[in-house]
Structure formats: C-alpha cells, structure tokens
Image 1 (spheres, rainbow, N blue to C red):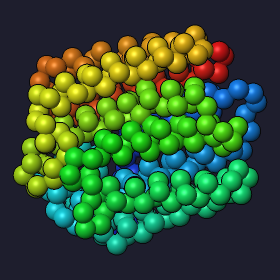
Image 2: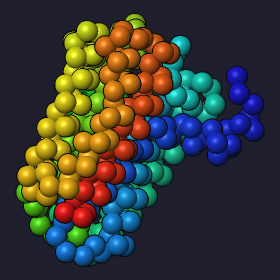
Image 3: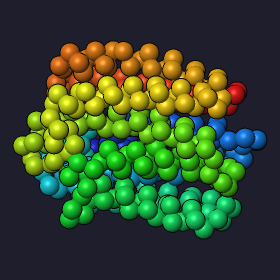
Image 4: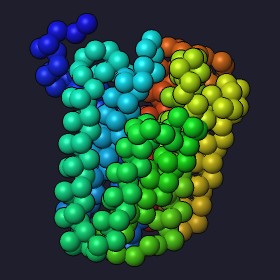
Length: 293
C-alpha cells in the first residue's frame, strides 16, 4: 500500500491522468483549427485546447475511481490506477475529476460568451458523456459503447467544435477532417481494450472488445487505421497538402505487426504507446497540411 505522502505527489496524479491518452485531446483541436479559412483567433484556440484536455483528464479520473470502486482494476496491467493501486481514495479521485470538469466548464463558458450559448449545450453534453462513460449506475463503457462515445466527442464534436469557435459555422472540411481524427482516437481505445480483454471478461466489463472477441478486435484495429488513411485522402480532395497526414501512418506499421502477430497483455503496452504516437504524428502532419493548403 502506498505511503500517505504519495497521495499528494503530483507525479502520481499526472500518471493517474493517463498522459498517453492526451493526444486524443490535442489532435482534434489542432486539426479543427487548421481546417478553417482565414486567420486564427488564438485565445479561442488555446481555450478550446484547455477544454479538450480538461475533459479528457476528467474522463480518465472518472474511469479510475469508478473502476476502482467496482473492483474491475484488480490485477489490471497498463497505466497507474490511483484507486485500484491504493495511491488515492475514490473520494480524492472523484474530486479531481470534478475539478477537471469544472475547469472545462469555466473555460467553455468564456468561449460561449464570445461565440454563442449553443456551446453551453455542447459542453454540458460532453461533461455528461465523460462522466457516464464509466460512472453512474449504468456506465455505457461497460456495455460496449465506449468507441461510439470517443468517435463522437473526441472526433466529431472536438474537431468541428474547434473550427466552430473560430468561424462560428460548421464547415464541410471540418466535418470530413473529424473522421480520421475520430478513428485514430477509437483505435487508441480499441488497443487499450484489446489488452484488457482477460481482466474485463473476468470482472464483467462488457467492452466492445469483450463482446466481439480477440480476433475481431485485432481486425477492427487495423480497419480503423485503414479508415484513417481514407479519411485523410478525403481531406486531400479539399486541400491537397493534407495528404501529409498519410506520412504519420508509417508509425502504425510496428503496432499493426504486433496486433496481427498476436501479442497480449503486458506485451501490448508498448503497442498502446506506439498507437498514441501514431495518433499524434498523423494528427500534427494533417494539421500542417491543412494549414498550408
């Protein structure tokens, strides 16, 4: 059991925020901002990034305390679990989630004042979705809907929303660009859930990976990366330099080999990291291509 002093250690809390998942918050803001026509209002871009990061971290903390309370983190491999690893109490982690969501709400409200009240509705829906992923009496992440949540909120909503706060309208390019962004974020979750199939099966957590099985989850992972490439090609029809994003998918060669090679459990931890690197590299190259296009 961790010492009491460890419970205030910022390094532990940073690890509990699961930094490897944060590209899922950075990439949509970068891509959405680059997909606009005209100059960038930089304070709005920074505010959108803060909101996205706060939502991601808040969702991760909810996942930590909710899984910890249910006992589904027992013996799980992968990132630090604050509650499951007895590094913090469920109450402390719940408070950290509330603070994260509160930060998203405050900064989002500032954006709403500048752009329009519709952002309040989107923000409230995003916070509710982040909490209900694994929190509450019937968390949808336990019933195989986590991938849908990630695609909608960390793909469509975050990307289109980041463009919207700049130009105050929904554009076709932002919607198209949101597809590969969302698919990359889903690929990260699928890899995480592939690694956790044995533990989730034992604990009764019915993720999509548990529902469709090991082999189909591996096929889904590869299909998501292929779909990402096709989405980038579609972006190239609007702005040809966006095809730079395809270079980022070169980083996916290694994780694809690992997945198709049958790696399991702890052996998939480096593959999860490589998937995050693929997401970040592809997203940033797509951002550059859209920006110069």
